Amino acid sequence: MNIFEIAEQGAKMLPEKYKTMPAEELEERVRAVKSRLGKKLFIPGHHYQKDEVIQFADATGDSLKLAQLSAENKDAEHIVFCGVHFMAETADILTTESQKVYLPDMRAGCSMADMADIRQTEKAWSRLSAMFGDTMLPLTYVNSTAAIKAFVGAHGGATVTSSNAEEMVEWAFTQKERLLFLPDQHLGRNTAFNLAIPLDRMAVWNPISEILEYEGNLEEVKVILWKGHCSVHENFTVANIEQVRADYPGMKIIVHPECRREVVERSDLAGSTNFIIQAIEKSAPGTHWAIGTEMNLVNRIIQSHPDKKIISLNPNMCPCLTMNRIDLPHLAWSLEMAAEGNAVNRITVSEPDASNARLALERMLARS
Ligand code: 13P
Ligand code: SF4
Image (cartoon, rainbow, N blue to C red; front, side, top):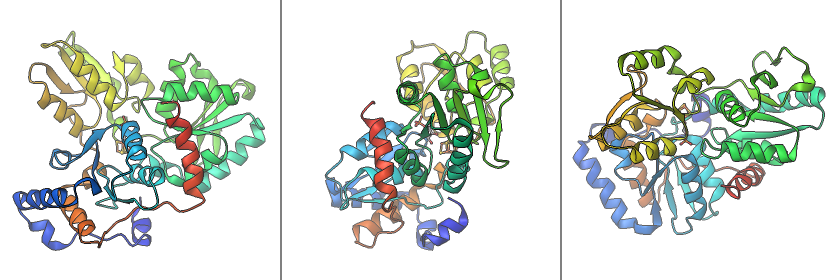
């Protein structure tokens, strides 16, 4: 979310006293609210969250698991989401009206989700419909705003996550002959390629120039990829892979499918955050791994597997800066405000977007 949208939503900023509070006191305060609210409180934490936050999560997971848990949870009155804005929106869409979802810091957006706004999407759809007629189904990565999910739901499409993208793309082709895949070109390209769709049958929609980047015959296009990307995963390069192959012969390289095609192609394995965690957990002691995903998660995996040699694929990698906005002071503040009935930074998706976005999410959850 950009700074103007934050201001528009009346986002509250962290009070000064929490900024200077010692970590032990903050932790004590979090524990106190958790024990006071019990089952009335649910704290989901995405794998990319900092350790200081994840230690208090009631459940950790990838985007799919956190969406499933939000849909299943009927007990919690307060859901304090430790993740980014689109995840909290998804939780609000999938929970009941009486359940309240909060994001401890409203600046925890996602640069990829910001790469497709609803006006651009409506414009693109009308331009592409003029080229392709009624042959397209829209699919959106969950890393998108509620308005985009609503657009997709209203047009018969669905959301996808990095764990179920292949199943969802296969399903989409049972509905229509072409796909518009928003907003991550890399996940879209990697997924379609795994399903044997040749690269030369994928076009790219550039939402800035409003041009379809494609050199062949339009009739041949199967997938239209929105020109968006993750600014974290784009930092893994072919040069990083070559370096690891040269420095550590035999080391396995595993990456997230938000990485570029050429990186995924040269890696040994690619999959969601959950897939990466499982693959390393199942591997034999003494195995060697280079991981291409966000740094908080890579560091946590390194710490939990002292019996394996694990490094980041890019030695200069940083954490996802927006995920990192959720820290211990924001968590303590958010929980205390919720417990006092004075909640801050509530995430609400209004109608008709909520209902249409729910359609897109439910089509995915039914197939996951
Ligand atoms: P997953 O948790 O679905 O692997 O997604 C990674 C991500 O970038 C979330 O923002
Ligand atoms: Fe968005 Fe990338 Fe951060 Fe995930 S890692 S929240 S896709 S910017």
